[in-house]
Image (tube, rainbow, N blue to C red; front, side):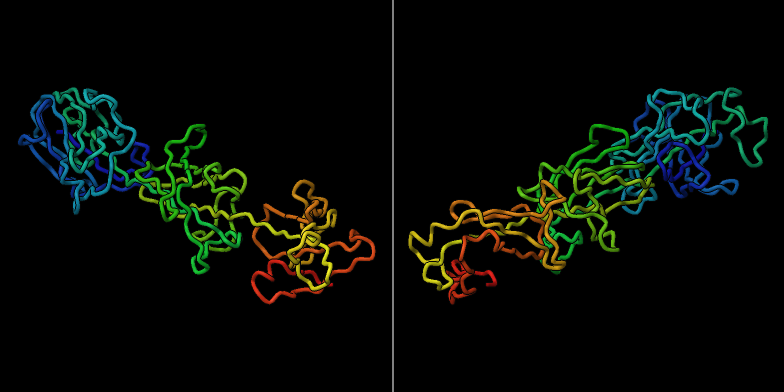
Length: 390
């Protein structure tokens, strides 16, 4: 006789663990070595409960000879008991290996990338009287039969994993995906998948038109994701991670490196479709200081008022706290700009938010005051009026 186990190998280690389940109702066919799987099999059987254990199969009264076992493609197709399952990764290296030498509970199915078309087979093995593995017989089988039976040819299967989800433009830089605020996905961001301890990615992809990415067909295990920061749009940064209480809407990437280091070991059929990254465009604020010769609050189109005033200090503050914004090059100091020779100033590379500026009166020319504010009545006037509180 020959047989033994069909099981769901949740961790894809090729070994039947105590908490893993046998798979019943799987059809198996026994063929002479070298036969075509399109030929009529020597005999067939179905995995079932034997001796109180699920997933067991047995071909009885098999003459001595060389054989292989095949699980037909139909078992992996829609409505089949192995639909969407693939053969366990650790397996017999050579289809000519003698499966007698494999320990009970180890996987002997030769991997095939398309089991729904080709099925899964074991390697070929010899059955000889008095020369088969011993100690693997269970139940009421007489001990004298033990070395006539090979009950070590096992098939493990797992359901591939999925990892993904999206990169979105976080317009308010709060680290939370808010489609109701018209936040949307960002295409063409590079994403890499790594195994722990590996310096080269297992696979690389990029986000689609809606900002989504996905890695499919993965074996059970631990994985890391890295968003490639050099593929971000110009003047964009990664949003803060771990904000809010919903893992499906927060950003997971390290704001500096783009890494998502997930410490979970994913078992067969599990998925992580919530590894996201928010990015935001940096913003800027600026303007101009000029001599308002006629004190009308508008920068009129003449050479004198267009000249501007240099060296006026402008301070930037957070509107919510009235605290000065730190200098990005010296965080212990306040962010201060000075007008150039044309009277222009600029604060750039800012995180989106509410700010206000303060023009420092101590740097005004002597005996000069601020013009009346908001004197313009049109859009053009608004671009050329004075905004500062006198």
